[in-house]
Image 1 (spheres, chains in turn green, purple):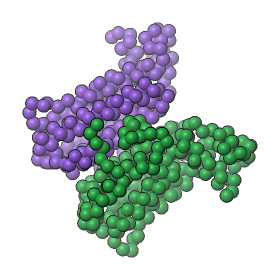
Image 2: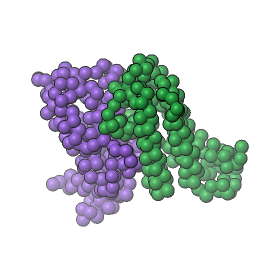
Image 3: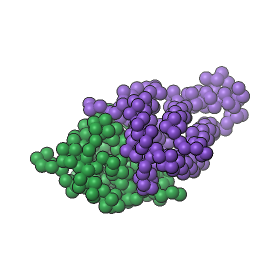
Image 4: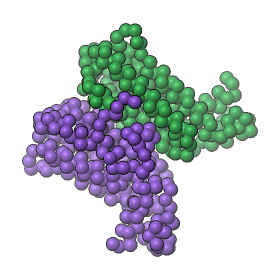
Length: 216
Length: 216
């Protein structure tokens, strides 16, 4: 692996495990048994590392939403999409933990995040168009517009929600199972609009990702 | 007004307008034409001011969810509940802008927030029980469990969502109209489960709070 890629991989690992705020470039260099000077040769500062990871994340996320255009969408396509989405959210889980902080002092990152959000909204809307055409979803344009926003908020706020409320047996470090529950919540958002094969497979799909919050 | 209350009122105003991170106790004292020493006589530090505001907010929020128990709930009761909820979210809008940051270095605040979240979940579940008994909602226990979590996330993440994505014509300073859209999104979450008078009044209620995100 190239030195640059090794720095990115180790940074991602440390950011995910310890939280980005607690990890400095010196920590990263030490964990790689590398001099800080060598690290600075590849990245001028921590923001540059974060930005590169963010760009990789957004590129990967855009890919998760690509569905076949030459045939009808099936329930299997949708499950595949959820799995890819989950995988990206998990792999880069430090990013949505505190996005407000990450973009607050970094205009390039803020603008890039806004473009990302906009692009994702366009892509997810298109995914729902394909699902409607395939008979797996029935909803008005207004219902889809509201649904998109609610899905975005739940998916991007999930890690924050767990850590602030302590719900769903939240513990540090977070496990992938805790993130799977996020897909359960997303499935519940679209549940009322599911039709055909998607409606038939709803309960099995939900059960494979989590369970409803029980009364305390 | 007592000095203590004047400090709290001015702090809330400045936190809401400028963001809590940019406002120091010196700023607060200066805005009140008060010596820092006088302020410290009432509050040992900024965290103590934030905590007191947080306690007032949580007390007020718990009150918003009190519904009549001696008769059936009406659509008017629900609109009243939304208005009180909106009013509290607006009055203390700095709190949910960056809760992760506020509780990250403050164990008392973190524990208090967790108790608040738990209490609110119990209260909102009870509200839905009353709505089901009044014939305004039809949903299974699992559907309610998932709905509660999604409503909580959308309501508490809304300010963050607006500021990070720039959607819904977000601008600084945030206006109350931008927050009203949050209630629109919450109404869309429960829309599929509405029955009777609540279903009949759905479109009018939605229109009074905002509109669906349009395709870009």
